[in-house]
Structures are given as structure tokens and as C-alpha cells.
Length: 289
Length: 290
Image (cartoon, rainbow over all chains, first blue to last red; front, side, top):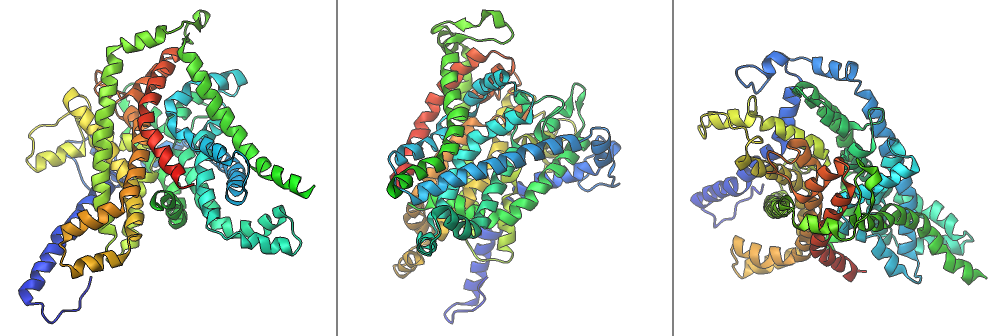
């Protein structure tokens, strides 16, 4: 906040400005933050309440008795490690495959002029036109025919439907920001294009690759629609496991909220590290007119 | 020799990504079109075969299909509308200088990285008709005097899921608009100050016009995502009670889940046609730049 005073500003004027700032700034900020963060607070509080308090007469806003029982139960009885491991396998494989093929394509779009370039670029955007559920149905029959249904492979493949096109665009934006004189200098010194790319561009691009990777990982970690149809008991991922905690007899909210907290902590940590670069990349496309 | 090698190189680079996209996007889209003309129910595999326009006729005569379209429109209109308004408000706030701004900005993005299923379940618990915190708060504030089963009754369930999708989408709008706000040259505001412009005048005559492109692209993208969203509604209500929260995407998902793939494909073709009203302008605006 600015604290210096303008000589012409009277005391009453200052008080009015302060009040105005509280009304137009602090109160809206507070209300929005409470709205956005309260559900997380509530999820956490629910996960550490004993069952008796959870389903008691009165709703308590801070647990009277803390307990970690639901977390222990989640991992012991419900073997939550398994879906976590499955999600990790699917998300990290999707991330690696996507980064590799998208980086190559993005580099080509950024540095070369070639016949049909525009058409190919269009192909990497049109996937936005197709509803997720439209792809879901034929992919289900394709995975069934390929024998991939109920394997992690089916999820990795179907996640590339949205991760590859998106990553091509994101990485293309990052590479466009690097002057091509960087590689040209190396090529003058006798390196070929591949060597120049690996030695010069790749190291500079590492933070952008991490940011893109985090985004791909997050999306694969969070995806539900494909996961619920393409997995079974053995290889179900976290979102499916969470939804399955809702049984015939109702919902075990303490377990479910504990599972929720365990699910978002890893993605939150990754996201905070990659955030700055990721937001820059995402917004560049929409902001540049 | 050298020039020929040079010409093949870019094609080799895009080939792997292209093969993936063709296999997992374009082939399936073609398959979906084929399936929409077939009697394709995996519960009755012997009856699978082409049936002409039969599915299209049944879909058009299906009252649930039409009511799902109406709900999709409400879902998108109110969902994206309030995401925009509240996201814009948050962006305007975050564009000012204050203590811990970076921290507040990071924290406000968390809903965006939370799985849709979890979002649905978290809010389902908040809305709970027996132990829900929202009911408790409303009673303590004197707004109502008995617990409301928000997700179990027709009148409140659609607004309740819409509030949830608004909550999910605020962060995305706010980061996009914030980036746009930071790109507006301050000289514009300084000139307006010299002319004695009021705050709201600056908002309507400088800020919003400068953000036109950002608002346009972000809103279209958001409409596509919200219309496609299945996980939030499905984990809250599965489309119920009595179809009250069943958008077209959720209806298609439910039909696909019950293995009636032909009928589901036909409906998704209609969804694609509806979405193209938004997707085509989006694509065109992306190409203008390239």
C-alpha cells in the first residue's frame, strides 16, 4: 500500500480512501479466498475427525479430537498405495512419451518452413473440436480389439489425445521465444542441426520442459472419464479409487477426504515449482493478439 | 544432396506426434461417425450392424436428449459466466500491489490442479443433507431453519453443481486475465488520469477493450471444457436426481457406460456439432496469429 501523503490530501479524504480500499479491495479478496480455499480446509478437517464427531449431533469447525485413523485405514485396509502407484506409472509414462514426440514436432514447427506446415499445425489444434465423450466410445472398442483394455497402456494412449496437441503448442511457443541465431552459431562451428539442438537449445529449454511435463503429469494424474472405463480392480487409478469409496451403504467421508488430501499434495508441490513458467507459457497464446 | 536432406528433416520430426494424433484422435473420430450409423450395443453383440439413420431418429425423438441439451446450455451459460465474472474480479485484485501477493496468487490456483472427481466429492460432502457444513452455516446465519438436501432434490441440484464448476474455473480465468492486465501499457491509464477519468470509466474504456482478445479466447476455451466436463457432475450426482443435473456429456457418458455405444456415438456427433459453434471461432482466432 502507498503510504506517502500528497500535500493537498486532507485527513477526511485519506480516511475515505482507506474505507474505499477496504470495500473495493480487501473484502472482495477475503471473500474470494474463503470461497476458493474453504473446501480444502473442510476436506482436511474432515479427514482428521473421529467418526463419532464426523456424524455427531453438531458440526464442529475444528476437530475436538485429532485422529490419523482414516489415513492408516486408507493405506492398510484399502491399499491406497496401489492406485497411487498405478496413477504414477500412467502419469509418468504419458509425460515422457508426450514430451519426446511433442518436443520434436514443436521444434520443427518453430524452425522450419515446409510444405503443408499450416495444415499439420491445424491438425494439432482441431482436437479441441472433438468432445471427450466422442473419443471415449471408439477408443474403448479400439482398446478392446488391441487387447489393451484394462492395462495401463490403454490410459497412456488415450491421454495422448489431449496431451500431445496441447504440448506441441505450448513448447512451440517456448521455442519461438528463443532466437534461431543460437543454433546457427553452433552450426557455423561445424555442428549439425541435431547436435546444435541437443547442445544449445535443450539445456535452455529444461525449465520449459519441466513446466510442460508437470502440466501433462497433472492432467493424467487427475483424469477420470477414460480411467473409469479402461481400468479394472487391478490397475485402477486414484480418481477411480476415490469414486469407488462411495459404496452401496453410503460414503466413508473420513477415508475419502484423507484420500483427497493424499492425492493433491504431490501435484500441489510439483505445481508450485513449475507454476511461473507454466503460467507464462499458457497465457502467452491467449494474450498475444 | 544437402538440400534434399534438409527438406525431409522437419517431416521426420513431426512424424511421431502426427502418427499418435492420427491414431488416437482422427481414427477414433471416424470410427465414432461409423458407429453412429450402427446398432452397436455391446450387451447384444449379435445384433451389431449398420442401421442407417435409425439412431439419429431415436435421438431426435428422445425427450431426455433435448432436456440434456437445455441443461448443457444452462450449465455452460451460468458456469462459464460466473467463472468469468469472479475470475475477472480476482485478476483485478491480484493486479494490485499488496503484501504476499505471490503467495495469494499461487494458493488461489489450487482448485485448478485438483482432480475433477475430488472436486465433486468435496462439494458433495459440503452440500450433504445430514452432516453438511453448508447447511450448518445457513442455519447459523438464520438463512433457513432446516437442513436442505441440496443434491437430492430437483430444484437445488443443478444450481449446486453449477456453483461447483464455477469454483473450479475461477483460477484459470484469473491467471489468463491477469496476464492480459499486466500487458496493458500504463501510459494508457496515465493519459486517462490526466483527462480526469473515473475508475469505472478506466475499466470500461481501457481495461476491457484491451483485454478483448484474451477474454474471447479464454471464454471459448472454457466453454469447450465446461461443456465436455463429466467428472464433476458424475461424482456429485451421476446426473440425477431424475436427470436434473444430466448435461449432454453426462448423458452420453452414462449411455456409453451401459455399453449402448451406437446411441452414445450418435449423441456425441450432435454434441460435436453444438461445440463447433464455439470451436470454429476459437480455431480461427488461433490461426490468425500463425
